[in-house]
Image: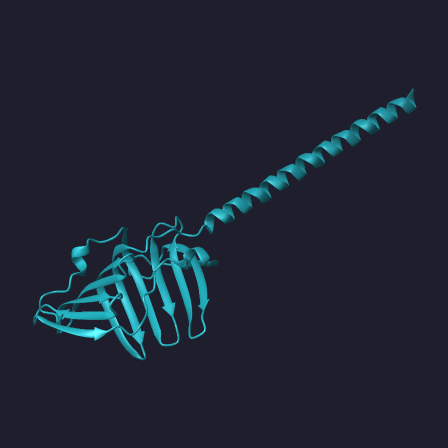
Length: 216
């Protein structure tokens, strides 16, 4: 009888230990799965429109010649054209109209009613069309004044070609709905854009008409 009691107690203890171990394993597995889901959600690649209107700080350099604008950037990705409206010291309001289909750039000084035509020296690059090919690369922060405390997700991508390569970097908010900044670097061209605001959608075509004072 005593032997039977000992065996019974031993079996019960073994069953209890096994059950506790299974519950612990299940809990650990659930925690791991939740961590994976949370990480994946945090690293979800943004889906941002390549056509947009934004308030920006726009910096670019081509063959050591640099420009800096603080104003409105309008991009029509479908029509391969963009426009920058800015105010510059000693020049007043300046509009920069770029028509990539005809490789022409018009720099318009409204104060003096002067328009200068230039040949575009760089290719048309979509601002965000590369993001779905990118690699999540940790956290980043907004760069414009008053918002530098905002944390976002960073994505990077390197596009290699026979003649040149591009290094691209995007910092977007955690929700993936707004860019904080974007950088593009090639051998002869660099572009950096810090976004103060971002409105997705193709701008009205009237913004890309060549003014009358410009050469045709």
